[in-house]
Length: 137
Image (cartoon, rainbow, N blue to C red; front, side):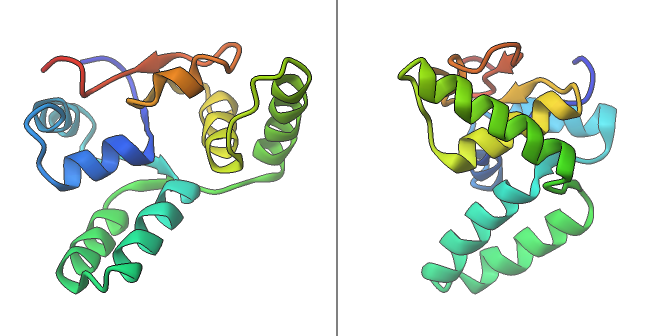
């Protein structure tokens, strides 16, 4: 395992479901780092899904996970990076969703690789280091 990684929403959701494709990566990562790191945007995306499904048991488990994780805010620096990314992607005709732009900007601002299975979108972001915890264990 290497240094700290920012987890995208799809990876964190997969880990929470104990998906055998991602869970071994998560266990190894936690042994080394003792906590996950993800954006407040990922927190929002997971919370909205759990609340929409009224998944109370998963909601309690997610709140515990958040309390023991490093949840990175959308700071002024992240917003500035995100607006630059948006402009670049818009001009190149390769725009991705705002949530993905904010998550990518968080990774870039904190100089962290992003663990995501959404490589098709995130490959468009210049300078973003990507990992996929779902490809191989």
